[in-house]
Amino acid sequence: MILHDLRRDLFTSNHVRGLLRLYAAALVLSPAALAVLALVLVGEEVSTAAALGAILLGLILALAGAMFLGRRLAQRIVGPMGLLVRAARDIQEGRFGSAVDLNEFRDAPLEFKLLGMAFNRMSETIKDHISRLERASITDPLTGLRNRRFLVTEGPRLLHIALRSGSKFSCLMIDIDHFKNVNDQHGHLMGDRFLQHITERISESIRGSDLLARAGGEEFVVLAPNSGCEEARLLAERIRQAVVQNPYEAQGVHLGNTVSVGVAEYSLEPKFGSNLFEDMLERADRALYRAKEQGRNRVALWEDGDVGPDI
Image (cartoon, rainbow, N blue to C red; front, side):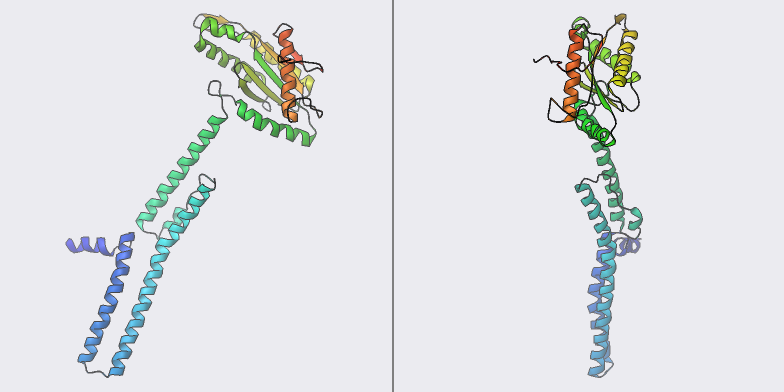
């Protein structure tokens, strides 16, 4: 039992420690074997030249054995280490989820196999957490819609695609009428639920190609690719009617509300903002302001001369 434990601990090649001890044992035993060989030859009264030749041959064989063991040691340790370093560099450069091929660790010591599996689990966990953080950074936590941050980054990209293809592109700016009264009369919790209700009605009314985002507060934006002003107006009217026809009812509370919508198509001659997308948003916002000025619960298209609340 003791000899078995000793052999397992000192001379197993399944562990890094065992490999190093095997290599150290080879380096120590080789000179000892040469010394024993020298004594034997001297006792046999072999000529000095023959003894030196035998010792030199033994030295060469010992050196070759040490080199062979060293090479095997390097292959079983340095190879897997190189794979781990390359995968770690991938993660450092932003390629999250990079993994090592565990098949390459078949002949590696047990410690490296465990290290490889742990690295893959860690890499996948990092990728998952990064994905969650990225989704959270562009998602409104209350409604589950894309937020303004996503809107101002994705919107210009979608508009650029429309410009390159020569297709139409419009924007709807939606505002819940008298939403402050809901919060004041029924509390913010009911206001949040009502906001979610309105979100569902808008989501059900838009097309699969449209992008709906919460701009902030009770304001929403719908980006409508492949839609001119008339198509966008029809879409806005469908949204307005869906809200009117589906009041919120829960816990004995009945809330019938309306929305006002401003519609604008992009223009190659911008008047507002620093780019075509900002200009389109501002046009839709000014059209929305006019819809509210004219009594709310209506759709208004951008017209030259529309002013905003700051003018």
